[in-house]
Length: 55
Image (cartoon, rainbow, N blue to C red; front, side, top):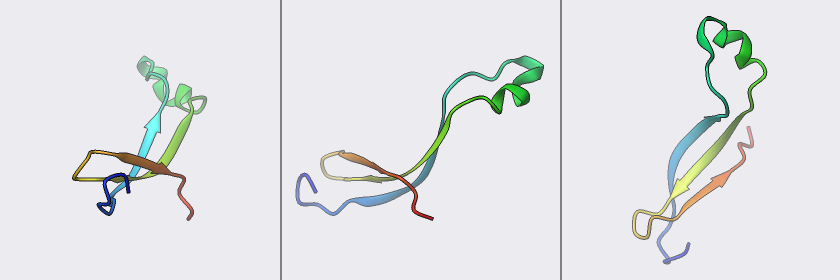
């Protein structure tokens, strides 16, 4: 809590590094880096926090 307002759950976001490449996009997807994070935000000050999923 940066401004003493409780953080709200924004859900799980999946991030993907890299581009899909034409017809072979699905094959190249196997070699891309993907990460998922649970995201929380403050409606008052706009602070955002990322946490690793624990399930």
